[in-house]
Each structure stands twice: as C-alpha cells, then as structure tokens.
Image 1 (tube, rainbow, N blue to C red):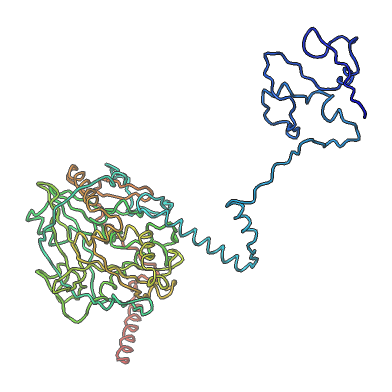
Image 2: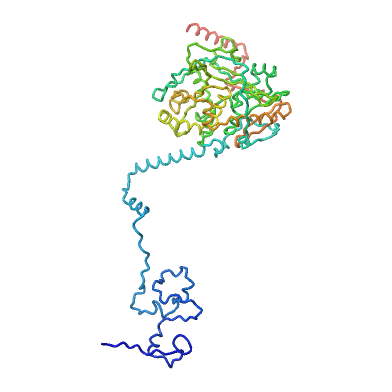
Length: 567
C-alpha cells in the first residue's frame, strides 16, 4: 500500500500564514508558491472559502463589494495564464450558459401556435385586407374626431370665406368666443301663440314605407312659391311691433342659427337693428341662412372650385332645392287643405303657395322683455283624432366616397349607422332643424333620405326613406340642451340692448370659433345687389341710321310672319 506523505508544515510564531523566512521554506512551501492566497485581517468578514460559480464572461457586470477580497482576476498565477498553452483558453469549470426557458405559460403557447399557423401568400387577398384595414382606420378616425360636434379639431378653415365683406369703416365692438356659449343656461316658460297664418296639407304616410329597394323619384314643384322673408319685411311682425307685443323680434331660422352657433363651422351673419327700445334680428337678401350647409362639420374637405357640383356652395343650393321639393312631395295632394286664421301673409291672390303655416309665438325673457318669433311647420297629421304639426326636412347624399357610407346598402339594415354619420358630417344643420321644430312646438319632425340617381348627376334625385322623430327625444339624442340654447339667445339680446340705436351685424369668424359684433352705417346692406353689365355683343345697340332702322323693322316683320305661319 502506497503511503501518503503529508510533509512537514512549518510553524509561524509571528502570525498567520507561512513564515517569511526562506530558510524555513520546505517542499510544501515550494508547492504552495503558485497557490493563490488572499491575506486578511481579523476585522474583515470572511466570505467564501472557494467560489466555484465565478465566471469571467461578463467583466462589466456589477461586483459585490464583499467579493473584492477574493478577486484573483489580476493575478497572473490564476486563471488562463496559469494553464499550459496546450489547454483550451475557453475552458471553464462552470457552464456560463443561461438556464433553458421552461416550455409552459401563455406566452410560449401563443408563440407555438403562431408558428404553426399557415402563412397566406396570395397577393390579391393581402391587398384586399390592407384596403379593408385602411378603410376601417379612416372611419374610426372620422368618428373619433367628430363625435362630440363642438370640441373636435376642425378642418383647415383657411379656405372658408366670410359670409359678408367686412368694410374698413365698420367699427368692431366685441368678439365672443364659442367657449363662453357652452356654459350659458336660461330657462323660459311655455310660449304663447299670438297668431296662426297660412294653410297645411296632410302628410302621406305611404312615404314611411319607402325603402332603397322601392325608391321614389323626387318630383319638381316649380309652380309652388316658397318665401324666405326677413323679420322687418314681415307685415305681421310690423303689426305686432306697433302693438307693443314684444321688445325682441326674430324668425325661427335666425334664432336657430344663434342657438346652434357653437356647432357652426362656415361663416354666417345676422343684421341687428336697434329701433327705440325694440330689437330686430334680420338677415340680408341672399344670405347664407337661406341655404342649407352640406358636410359642414365633416373632416373630409370639399372641392374649392365654386362651379364644381360637389363644392360647398353648389351643395348648399342643391340641398335647399331638395328640401323644398321633398316637403311638398310627401303630402296628400288631393286639394284638402286646412286653412288657419289668416292666409299666407306673403302670397298674392290666386297665387299657388307651398304647404306652410306660420306660428307667431311669444316668449318671456324677463319681467319687461318679451320675444316674438315667426315659426314654420310644413304639414299636418291626424293620429287618434288629434291634429299634430309636422316639420319636413331632407338629408341628401351626393357621393358615398365623402361620407364613407352608401345609403343604398346601409339604410335598410344599418339605419343607425347612417344617422350617426350624418350627425358627424352635418351636426349644425341637424341641430338647427331640431331647434326650429322645438321653437314651433312641432309634434313630429320627419327626416327624409334623398340621394342622387348618379354621383355626377346633381339634377335628378330619389327618395330612399323617411323617418320620424319627436323633437325633444331627438334633441336629447344629439346632445342639444334647450336651456343652453336660450342662454345663448338671452346673452346676445342683453348685449345688444346695451347698444345705442343703430344698425349692427353679428358675423361668425370664418377661421375661428367666435362671433364678432360690428357697428355699420344705417344704409348698409340696402344696395347689395349690383347688376353686372352685359358684354358688348349681347347689348342692344340703338339704330344710328334710318336704313339700319328699316332693316331692323324688316327683320321684325319677317319674324312675325314666321310666327303666324307656324301658328
């Protein structure tokens, strides 16, 4: 049996460790000359005797201060330098690889399932999917941008022009931001009917059953006259003003514009006349209030060229034309007409007028302040032997690419989505219609959906459907607060009553959500219409010589003879 020679261990009487004297160095001392040794004192904490987990793969990692005593990385006698050149330099006692990840958990399962899914490489399918995602993202963006109707980011308003040219001699008195309108509130008692004029025809309920599959062509009513008379030109209002029935006079169109001002984007203007202690709200001849805005609150810009059939002005004229014809087509035209106390105050004898009734109503704004407004209703309906007043309005579709919703496909199955899109794109117009129905105390408001026969044909239209709403319920649906509406009117009336006698104009800024009040001369807006001269070739030239006059007479006689021959 081979024995184990421990050797002699020298004794150091002066302290710990081997003796410093070379004389006492033995075989063991010679053998331990290459053994790493870290001297320490008794005050230092003794950490590890041997650390088999230390790695040198990441020298930049944070070190534990307690390991500094046992750090032999700087010692040439330890580590790779102490090994023979034949050994592998990458040799490590401990494997430095990270432990393998466990193959369980939701993340691993999802990755495994995703790797197993088949990859579809069909280019046509991929292109169709990208288009669908793009269209969905566009609709979501439009919905989120224009949901509230008042605080959303608006279109670039630089392209919009002021509804009236601001003259340099006008004096700006005040400007009111729309943010102050949203905080106003004022409650008014129930109005009192002073007079009811005109005549109404009954509503044809057959139009409630119209769908896109059995659409009805929109007819034209050229023989019926429609009147857009301002406040001071109304003989009934002049009579009521002379009788001191009120101090403030207006029409439902003007009041609804004021009530829904925070929702407006396009510029508009209202003429205000202070005569004595009375206040008259008027509109100019050819004002924007006579037309109906289209896509006013939409984020999709319309063509800027005025002669384009899809420009803002062309669509406004088209919408007014559609609205008038629709209000007369959905009636029972059998000659049965209900006439009220007085005939239509604007029609001449024997003149065929549209079905419309004017309700002159009085509201109490203060102890000594009353407001009288002319309100319109377009039709009658009899339900359970009770007579109900109706207002008739029509929404028009001109091109599905602008709205993103095709009425012919969605109106029957997704009518709510169609209405929601119209509420985004035409929030101001729908709010004004609702305000007018509330002012007239209409029992029902009918909304028609009218579309072009072809997107490029703005002359021919079809009715795709008619839906009825109660004005108060619809006002709640579109977030139209009656107290806020009257608060806006009351604040503007109080502001104008503090002004001196004269003429003023209230203008909506075309690029900012605010209105401005200007003091204008007394004769402003009275001579707005300027007839443009005809070109020279179209002007009638007077005869300069007798011969030319004779030739002209001969030509006239020849034309008369040809007319007689044709007759």
